[in-house]
Image 1 (cartoon, one colour):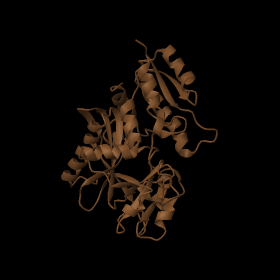
Image 2: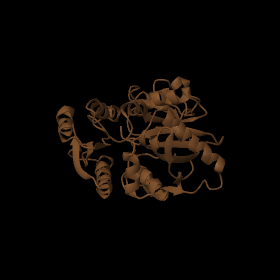
Image 3: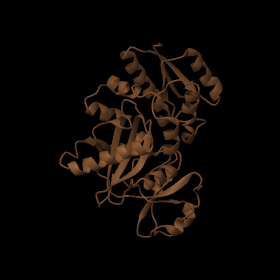
Image 4: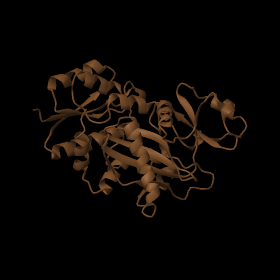
Length: 322
């Protein structure tokens, strides 16, 4: 049996942004972990010619492909294509399968499926549906099929009662964006490895929006993740153990995350981002299949907090090959 693992990532642009460059940090972590586990590693990338880029993988006949592809042809919404090809060629690969990737990267479709299965998620509308909005509530404009923080910051949070909102919303193509109810409350990120019926849930961190002034939207936007000199980056932190005295909320959060995994048939590794409003009921903001596993990522931080080494986290992922 082959002892070669191929680490596959999307090809970087000529001038990669910090969030794009991040995949190289992930590839380095995975490579170090796999070598610790005794694998010989090859790092390959995939660009616009999928066939020519992926065909050599079939000739190598690896033990598996560690799939770190974050976009195809520049689109997150096409993530399912690479696993589809690997599946057709009978090449084992890590992470969420093609169906799960397809469903979760289309956020409005994912929200509809969650709602049908009794998983609470914030109300949502087309950007062309300004007349349907409750004037007493706040909302946020999000991309339908891109990573949650892509081009997203507090300017996308709005009060529906403000004049000019319908015209402003008209700037967003309803094929690429949607409106979601903004929930004022606590935010938690649940990181999970495994398969349906056999999930390992890592400790739950809460996102702390420290010293945010009144009225400033508390969201994990682009600045809080990638612009190191920004207020948002410096004042948004991850804190574990804030739920030590609230076992009921802990159980509700865990049950919600597991339900998402089961509904979308997620395997390998995924993260569920949840807001809890004043009623104490978890609402799922995003289901992130194959989330970032860079050394400074929330997923790796949660795994380390659970007592696992980076190599042990990666082993858990490769134990669930497709």
